[in-house]
Image (cartoon, rainbow, N blue to C red; front, side, top):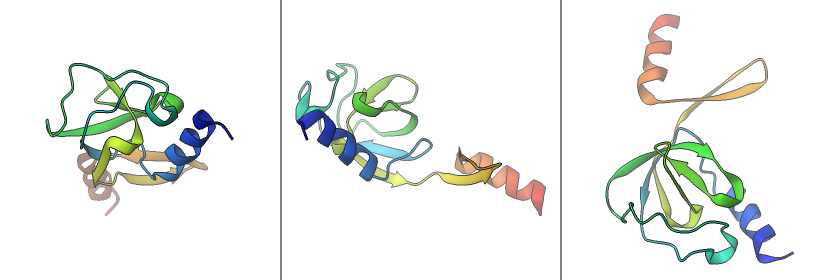
Length: 105
């Protein structure tokens, strides 16, 4: 297994998913540990919390529809709510989950 393949295995095992709220702990070096991307200069560690909006696989996780960063610089602050409809998993924000729950009860 090469480093890029190992990155994908660890990326998947991280448990991070679309809809999670995360914090960036540190900068990553360009292409560090098999991550297939460069660090976005606009983002600084400890800048705040971000929402994971896409799983870009070997390019990392997309935050707030803008930046792609590797799993190993992220700390999950809050997990997304996931529901399954017709066999498909759908991630919901806290607000959307509360609204859906209110409609169903």
